Image (cartoon, rainbow, N blue to C red):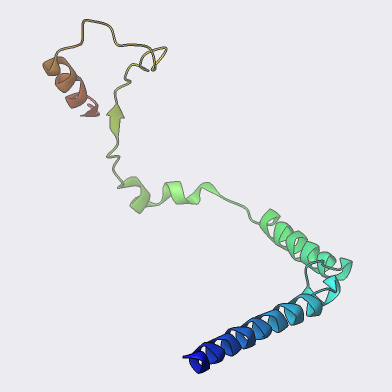
Length: 121
């Protein structure tokens, strides 16, 4: 019994030493900010800036013409939008107690059925 207790203590001490050694190694190897890449130098910033500038210059050279609107395929497109009926915004104070007269369930059902109505042309 004492032998197994001694083995478990030795194993726990060995594990603690390995963990402490790993933490020490991890903390001392990352003490230099230049080696971790946390701080970037001005050389890398200027190359990043140059790529942004070149992308912006490429976007400025793009021109859009209205030729797509004269295409027969564009003229055959149909509009399937539906009108959204505006609803009341709600109560001014949503946390205030409800009034004693509540709306009937049939009134709210008919309101919700009128939300989406097709556009009449």
